[in-house]
Length: 524
Image (cartoon, rainbow, N blue to C red; front, side, top):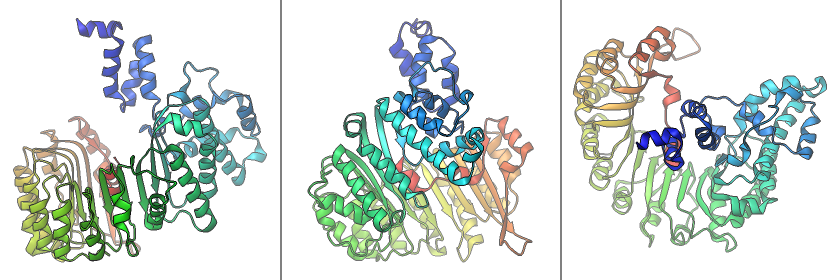
């Protein structure tokens, strides 16, 4: 009875709750629009709450956005003499008002991709490189103005700045946001910052820094901040300046490749953050004994959720043990991309870290490789993402064999992500597949380092038993070219094989499209 009422439209609340399960499934939501008027009215907001992250890479929605331009904004666009038939004649919804998530970095690619076709409609004198760049910049500014003018109620606004993008453009966007303080105060629920690499230098840096601090002060509800390289200095000035106080709102800090060399006031910075729930340290430079001691001396709990060790880290075993004694219970993501060298390190993780969800280990020495299996067994209840790599090991063939002979026995029954970067022998791989036959792996990535062809075993033990959802396999082998050390061959490039896996509902993709970086992982 309830089901029939849902389809007849008598219970719109239940219908909406059902449709929300498909919020990231664009094709299904498009189908829902065609059911009836009620379903269309409920599905459209879900479809348009984050169009700039559309996985289908269809950016024609920009035309629907631009159709909402008023007279003054249209006049700016008409300077480029866009053809009238480029935009829809009318739209049924005010699409800019439906936006819930906006990321200043992710808006760039859709604009550039869409403009590749749009520039064909410009007047000939507007088609040189500088005019095209001006056109693209104009489209981006107009989109922001549309979002602001149409009173979009953003759940999250992310200010993300990367190395290589235009300084002046981002400063213009920040200025535009500051010119509309009511929008920031009343329409933005969560404000997050991601500042990547040495983006700003000299005067541009000072201008951007001032803009960022003004935005934070204006909003006074900063939830998350992610800083890279020297930008920890910006974060220090943010927390240590009385006018910019986010001590009651900031709950997540991501520090990526930050140099802690001259940081001596960690207690002043962190002790005033009253609602801090997670700290992520990713490949941070100069993560040494002195800095670790500052963490240990903090009066408040230091909720270290991610620790990814950089090759420049200088932590002795004793300090590492003390760090894990204080923070190990919070740790969810651990990685060492430059070689696990210490038995004490692994034994400390086994002893103090019971909640690790994501583990990345590489270049481990022969004498400690067996500790890996104790470690994985210990975190079996929580582990969901696992990467093991022997690239760079002195005895990568032997280490690969040990991993494949033992790993399958300690894997949990379900993994979201398994990434193996190994030198694979068929006999070892068959042992792994047999021992892990009760484990379902949503995303399986294998980079075979000059090993044997194991595809027949993949088909027998993985494909036919439908044990994965997404699969990526790359074979690396010595190149015959003088220019390259290695050649690569991917399963995704073999069309007949890809179609065969489709019959078993397994999606074959390229390895790098499935790779998950720790930076992306901690952000999500």
